[in-house]
Length: 315
Image (tube, rainbow, N blue to C red; front, side, top):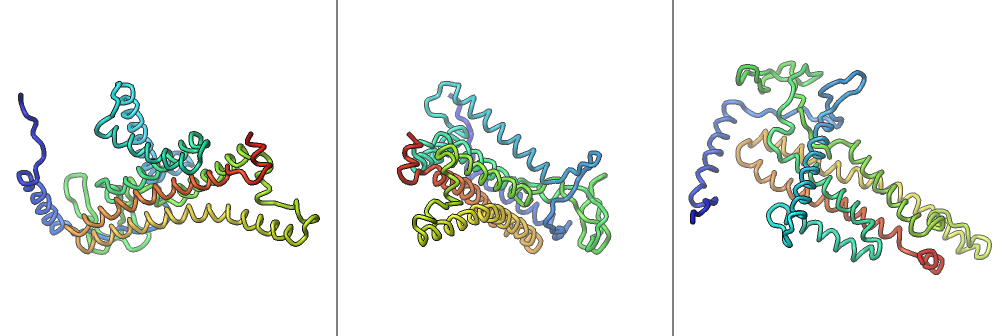
């Protein structure tokens, strides 16, 4: 029986050494330049009056990756294997962890909340990890710079690179990490907060809004009624603050990570950036899990009954 060859560090480590040597000489031949950093996403194409940005391209890539993951897991589930292996097994293990966390927190509402927890986690995770793909933020169009431009240098016929010398050109990348676009993080936060209110109404009915506007005890218990009314207003402010918290936490962490990779890749282009890529791998994972986990917790709190009225409505 013929044995399949596998990667062995002791035998194949020269590949790593070869890439390190090539990277060193490439950095000497074409010194890296710190890209132009801006908050808004860069426009790469126009379709009539519609401006297509590089974060939209990243969104399409992320959606395609998610559809491929769903297709692979679906095929593995239909194959009849009791325990999927490989990539499908890893996705199933992640989904099992997410569902167990949802079930332990949301109880009988776990099956309804779980899809949002899983979908948000996977979407944000794939969007964050696009940052690790070579060419993202570094391959794009050469256009006239408004300020702080650089010269260009030809690498191959039809292929040029930005040179350290001052000039009038700047790089507009084809793909930029989706989570560095505030439009995406705000839209995701609005979806999370809105669906939290939907689950609250589904679980408690119109009484759910007494959480925010509670005037029931103002006349019967004036002091405590006023306190309950003030607490309701604070709860309403808290719901709006979740949008800001969700949006800027994800945006700030991933945008700062991208800038860090730019700076380190410019200062020490050969070896140091690999360690920071590993750091961004874990940051992307943690931020995706935190976003999904907080959404699940807030939804679980919204469907939780308060007092006898909520219990009767649940029955």
